[in-house]
Structures are given as C-alpha cells and as structure tokens.
Amino acid sequence: MNPAPLDRAAVEACLAGSGTMLPQGAYTDQAVLDWERKVVFAGGWVCVGRAGDVPARTRRAVGVGDDAVLLMRDDDGVLRGFYNTCRHRAHELLPCGTSSTGRFLTCPYHSWVYDNAGRLHKVPYAEASGIDDAARDGLGLVPVAVAEWHGFVFVNASGSAPPLHRYLGPSLDTRFAPYELERIEVAGRHEYVVEANWKLLVENYQECYHCSTIHPELCRVSSPDSGGSFEPDGLWIGGDMELLDGVATMSLDGRAGAPPMRALTGRQLRDVVYLQLFPNLLLSVHPDYVMTHVLEPLAPDRTNVVCEWLFPPETIAADGFDPAYAVDFWDVTNRQDWAACAGVQRGVASRGYRPGPLSPGHEDTVFQTIAVLARAYLDGALPAVTSSDRNGSHVRQQTGT
Image (tube, rainbow, N blue to C red):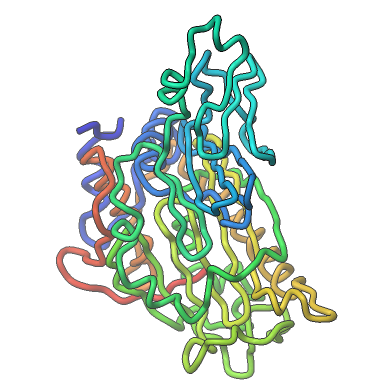
C-alpha cells in the first residue's frame, strides 16, 4: 500500500455528507501528480487514441504516466505494446509523439533492429558480440499491456490492472453497440493546453450546474436540468442530457450537418451521453457524431487536451460534408470551460481555499469522480469499480459539459 502524499483526514473528509472537493494539494502539489502518474495513470487503463492511429506496419510512441510506450502493428493486424527502450543501452527507439512505418525499427544509438512483433531482428557485429539466434530470442522488447475497445486504444503501463473488459464492466458494450464506435473516423481535431489541474477538467465535465452561467449556446439546445446519471459497473462515470424540442443535435443553431448514426432508435436520437472512462478519456456521444477529449497532465496546473470529432465513414465521404457545425459549437463551449477551470485553479491555489460542499442533485457525478480519487489516495491503488453510493444510498443527477 502506497497512499498519496496527502493528509489522510483531509481526504476522508471529501467523502462525508454531500462530499467536497479534494484537499488543496491534490490540485497544486507536484508530489501528488507524481503519485497519480504512477498509481492512477500507469496503474489504470489509459486511452492513447484511436486504433486507426496505428495502421499496419506502423509504430507510434506515446507517454503513459512516467512511461514511454511503443504501439506496434504488423501485417497480421494484431496490436502490440512495448516499453520504448532498446534492450542494448536503453536509448529510446522513437521520440514520444512520433510515428514510423515499415517492417523494422532501428535504434538510433547503436542500430539494433527490431521487427513489429518486438523481436530483435539483427545487431551490428553480432558474431563478435556473441549474440547468436538463441541469445537474440531473449533480447526482444519488453511487452506492455494494450487493448482495443470499440476502436479506442488503451495501455496499462504497470500491468497491474485487470483486463480491460473487467476494468470497464459489461454494460458499456451494450450501451454503445448501436453507435458502432469501432467504425467511426476522425473528421476534426483541436489540441488545447488548459491552465488547470486535469481533475478540474473532469469535475467540470461531470456537471451542468454551471451551464446556465457560462454556456448560453449549450442552453439553447439542451436544458441544464435534463437527463440523469447512469449506475456504473466499472471504472467509468457519467450520464446523459436531452436535446430540446426542435433541436437535432449540439450545434450553434441546433441543426445537424449530418444524418443520425444508422442504427440509432428511440431515445438514442434525442440524447447526448457524457462519460469519463477513468482516468483520461471523456466520451461525448451525440446522435450524429462523437466527440472525445483525451487528457494528459503536464503539470499540477496544466493539462494537454486532444479533442476529436468522429463521424461514420459514409458521412465523411458524402458530398459537401463539413464537420464545422459540430467542431465550432464545441470549440466555443470548450473554451468557456477551459476559462472556468483556469479560474478554479487560481482559486484552489489561494490561501483562502477551503473545500466546499457539493450540491446534491447537481454534482453527484462530481462526487463519484472525487470518490474514486479519494479511495485511491487512501488505499494506494485504484478501486475495482466506481461507486454510485453516497453514504449508502443511490443518487440521481444531471450531467453536462
């Protein structure tokens, strides 16, 4: 057990009554972020993008917690993960954030060569080095746990998390089957650096208590009081909101620039679903498109956010299609949120910060998010499931952007 470097009583106080925000250090201390990188990010299943980001004969280097990971896919289509470390003198094989293609990957330091299954293919002066075929078999790259879920790629850098299907629980597969997430493709992308702790972005995402104050565009297409929460059966949190009558989707004028996804029926055509797949994927599912936010903490007060808009391939291929109707709406809304989160960051850094009570009925999914972190801080490991209980009783709430 390796609890977080926070006062235990202050963490436990977050779970009392209606709940509160976390202690100040959870949002401001580098030591806490270092702990989160090891326990929450490396210890959980972190989303690192879409399966399409790693086509055949491609390698992609990504950061996960404190680790650098290589994603590889050969002609067989199987995704593999390895630590981004050469087995010779430990040089990184690819700079983080870059990709390469071809059958083989060569270390830029001493030219050891690996194939896309992570096997050592050849080394310079092999005979003089005493590296025969048997020795080469034991010098492949060190594997990392990777998994694909509905077209998303996840990495568990520590290898300590349960299999992804158990980590997320069984209900999400059923819930998202009609949306065919595995076949949608990226049609728009923005990247933001937000001057706030990554958890503040998640807390903001999990409620619409703030929507009538800072989101006039959103309130014209969906009521802040609509929808409700889902009861999670894995490490995810979220709920839905309803579109207003006469509104087709989340856009600045309420009109859709694309048809609904082909398998949706009934309420799915009127709802927008908002989920956090813990810790770093925010998944917003609309009748006609999907928006994702992938969070990467850069510092206690700074977070990188990759935001993508995904549509079915036949929509993208249609004459005259332009994703701007969705991208522009959420770019406006995102920037409103980022400004609010930066304001909260300045507030939690103040000597006057005292964790205040959350609002029952409006911030209950915020409580769930905080409770997952609080239990991890106390126990030194992620819990097995997100609890929907507050002092033993199930709660309902509205969720928002």
